[in-house]
Structures are given as C-alpha cells and as structure tokens.
Amino acid sequence: MLRVWRQRRSLSQLDLACRADVSARHVSFLETGRSKPSREMLLHLSEELDIPLRERNALLIAAGFAPVYSEESLDAPALRAAREAVELVLSGHEPYPALAVDRHWTLITANRAVGVLLADVPPELLQPPVNVLRLSLHPDGLGRNIVNLEQWRAHVLTRLQRQIDASADETLAALHKELREGATPSGAAQPTGPAREQDFAGVVVPMRLKTRYGVLSLFSTTTVFGTPIDITLSELAIESFFPADRPTAELLRRLAENGARADA
Image (cartoon, rainbow, N blue to C red; front, side, top):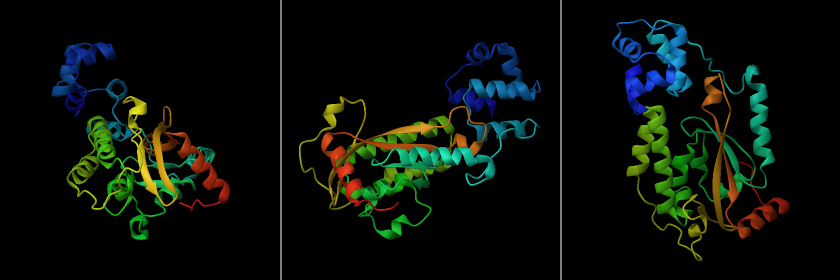
C-alpha cells in the first residue's frame, strides 16, 4: 500500500526518504515488509505523501494498528461547531449560490440562492441523494440549459480526474466514466449573446446557465477545512459561486430582494 501511494505521487524511494528525513533503505524495507513500521512512522510518511485520512486509517490497519482518525456524522454533537461554520459560510454568501458536498459530490446542504439554479430541474432529479456533478451534466438536469456545455463538461471531467489521481477513489472513477460516456442533452441551450469566457484568459471556466430569469454566468471557488482530523470534515467541501459579470450580479441581487429565489 505504501508503494502504491508513493508511485501515485510520482516519487522514488529516495525522493520519499529525503522528504521524510529517513534512509532510502528504510523506505525500501518498509515497502517489502522486511521492516515493521511504527505507528508514528506510518503517520509521518502518510503526511509526506498527502494520503487522505480515510486511506491513512486503512494503512494503519494493514500494519496492525488501530485507526487514528474518527468519522463522525455532520449532525453529531462533536461536529456541531463545524456544522454551524458551514451554515454560516453558506448563508453569508447569499445572494450568490453556495452548496456543501461530500467526497463523492453528494449534496449535503445549500443556501437559498441555489434554488435559482435549480428552478427548471425536474423534481425527480432533486430527490436525495443528489450528486451535484451528475445533475450538472444530466440531459434533463442543468445540462440542457448550460450554454457553454462542451466547455463546462470538459472542466468538470478534468477536475474530477484530478480528484481521482489524488485520492484513488473507485466511486469517483466510476462517476467519471459515467459522465464521460453520458449522452449529450438534445435541445441544449444555445448562446444568447457573445461568449465571455475569453474575459478570464483561461484562468477560470465560468458556467453560463440559461434560467427562467435570464442567463447567469458564474465561476466557483472551493472551501475546505484546514488541518482536519476527522474524516467527514476532511472530505467536505463548500462550492461558492460568484458572478462572472455585472449583469449576473445585478440579477441575483434583484432576485434576492424580490424574493424570487426558491428554497434549495
């Protein structure tokens, strides 16, 4: 397992040894089983290899040690402060959309502004659990209303592949295959004005979504918890959408003031 993660990070035994301040011989002995690692050494190497917390537990178990990292439900009392922090970020981001997802992009919670994006999505596609990436490219979901669908789809698949490379998550790999081979929506939205992607010079990819209120141009940022020691928190991410142009910002503010947004 240690060798697999080292190779996944494109490191030689010497590279890892230098990072961890141990000998390459010791790394070799650990990988071949000639030496038994200590719990502290495994945690140290896991940190240097940036192994996800869930997989660090698996590495410890394989070496005969008890797991170190807990996995609480977000509703658990121990995570109350974290849950409140998530809700604070989401509500504070209004009138712009923001949502929280788990490691597989399953929707956990969202602010009210997300309802503007989902207003034309069939109710059956919004029944929990909702996978955000699947919904965004679904022929009957957001996919049919994304004006720059080809560009957005390429962005989603590239981002998902980076997550797979970093985590080796089989569920994400299956999702990537599903989305890559999925059908393209028929009757998809067509550009209603000049494309604005060039305004970002390739720095970010905006999603241009045709809604009943007008075309929204949005780009997103990701917020994660710093130095988490709980698996749930380490795998939680907040996607916050920002207006990519002034008309989008004005439209979202106007919808919020007029109460036109739907609860998500």
